[in-house]
Image (cartoon, rainbow over all chains, first blue to last red; front, side, top):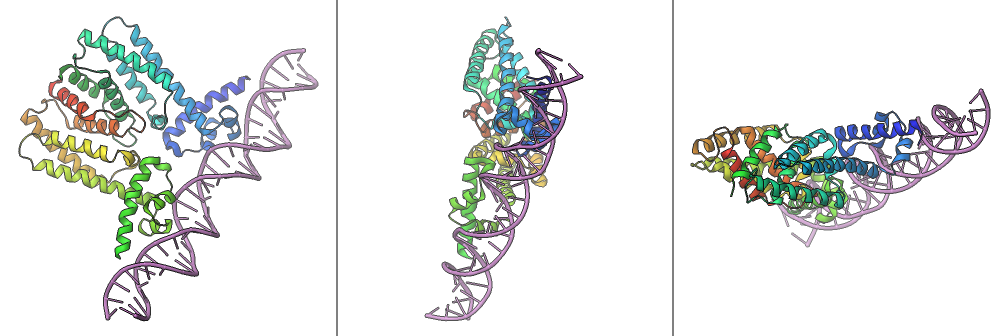
Length: 177
Length: 177
DNA sequence: TCCGTAGCGGAATAGAGATTCCGGTTCCGG
DNA sequence: CCGGAACCGGAATCTCTATTCCGCTACGGA
């Protein structure tokens, strides 16, 4: 691939993140192309359709989360779970502008499953370490992640202090029976 | 208003809830009209535009929540807050199919403000009654509500046991400092 | 530097869906 | 039971945007 083509590829992804974040799914390919400083034709040379472009964005975001899981699993102590949750929160915040779009389409099942398994392992370790109570289940953690996503990415709501929210909920997971 | 017109008005609202819930914002007026058993022209006689129709749905849903607040305020003991949170959760669940659409548009500021005030009062009472810890703030409760909305209305995620989630988070609010 | 080719821009096409319009129908007071 | 105001259905119109197409341009190997 020629140098200029590579540069355009990157610019288009970046522009798509920006424009989709600002205008939602309503954003047009024309606007994305303009933001990237290219013509629409160029966008279509790299991405077969608008859907394909959004899917690629989703794939990249999922990859980030998967990498975070690997990292957390590498921690020897029982704090991998808490770490991971903070990383997820940060990632949601970083992508909050366009992530709501991604929510609306099914994620790659294989990658999702891998993440779920990792979180299961981390939850077991956290229980063993006493970071969370023994009654904590994998689905409780999945619900917490969904909640983080919800409060961080909510389109119109006032910004929420999500680290504080996470701390409070973790206290609940430690205490509740 | 003629009897048949009233009936159609109700049918259209019902159909809009169904269709918007199933197909998202992408749903067409034509489909809503078909589901209601009327022509598109009839829909436009009652609602100036698709936006106006969705706004009306939002207004009705907000009214439900406002009523729940009044009810909770009428409780003399300190359990009004917990009650209200469960009612909100149920309302979110009832409207989950189309509520994600409503999220994307600003709610009536006056009604939102009234709800916020009510929740502030209920939070103060809950602190006094020891239902939640003294460090609990109004914004903590607002965040919890946003989280409930997020996990219940998430478009694609697996269904979450939200009463359990609520219980856990309330435990956190009682315990965290 | 020169040529062939990968790339590019953006006008034109195609299709979807919101909104309008008006000739027919259905209520309902008298 | 009648007349006419309210209503209704749904074809036609209007707009907006995804996607295609093709003549023109910019790399980069020889």
